[in-house]
Image (cartoon, rainbow, N blue to C red; front, side, top):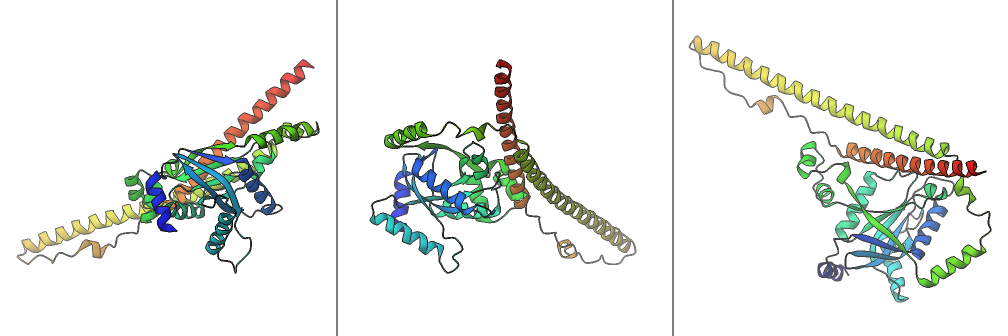
Length: 330
């Protein structure tokens, strides 16, 4: 199976994905699963994406969820069994990534990084879809597709997150994940059905999306942002302590070498042999470099929160201006 997949990847050049086309049926399955799994709790819903690659476009046509609270079920065996059953009924069964729910855009974590790295190194075309049910409930469908950049894959592969390694790879929180253009597509029959359902919908439906009260959502986003800013401040303090320790060690090393040179000069003036030179690195053991992965992920999450707050405020201002114009006409 892996040999055939590797042959497919080498034949079509699957690593270069410019856009993701998501079928409406797969989208509804993801939304249904995330709302059922996350109802009344903060658990993360996850599942497998199925589809195929056409040129430089990844088409996602189906999906299925991971088993929930099933400790005795092996996830890999479960996925293979599900794909085997889908193949029997002539449904797209090739894995092309995974999806995950999030709460107010809080998804940039080390777990996501390691999971996407595992998917993308085994299946080159893999993407991760991030769905936010809270934002969707306020009238804005929040579904985004991400992939790891080549620099991020190389860095995670080496497991070297020191400042020198990140600087060498030119990797920062801006270049950790790459957002892929996402397009939702429905068949003509589904579009016809949606038109009929829209005509059957009561006139009162959808009015909740015109709610002008935005303080609750904005307050939660700002509180989450403050927590991550505190975490980043702690990471900055750790790095500053490391820099001070490193500078103090260099200063002590310089003083030791000056003292040894002065002692040797005095001994030479008295006609005595100089002291044997000792290895300075043994006298002063180098301080282990501080990994910067947590700080980089925290910075990426802060940047994501800032973008979401800016977009949310812009949309809220648009609502307010529309409401003001309607009120003026009255």
